[in-house]
Amino acid sequence: QVHLVQSGGGSVDVGGSLRLSCAASGYTYSRNCMGWFRQAPGKEREGVAVIYTGGGRAYYSNSVKGRFTISQDNAKNTVYLQMNSLKPEDTAMYYCAAYVRNSWCYDVYPPAFGYWGQGTQVTVSS
Image (cartoon, rainbow, N blue to C red; front, side):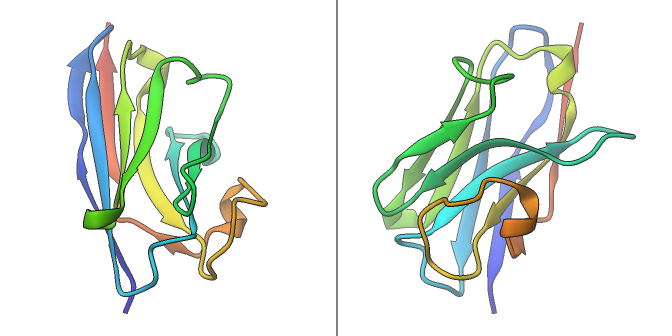
């Protein structure tokens, strides 16, 4: 059974930092596409960053480029999202996700990801 277990998140002031973790189990973690998405109340789920765990190549949305960093620890089957210089508009529920079948990140939109974490709230206060 596949599990993506998230940790981290919380509340922080504008300009602060947080780190999210996503530990994967029950499937072949290596050489797969994993990503972070977020959803604010009343808005659609949007992509934040994705990474191909087979080589580390990462892609970011324009709204977080230069502030967020997605990374991996293959020994721990874990993907991280380091969030710096946080803004109020970063406030949302954050989800990690993974492709069902091992592949490079050919599609970065939510429907391409079949496994999802439980979500964690990030709140940035001004």
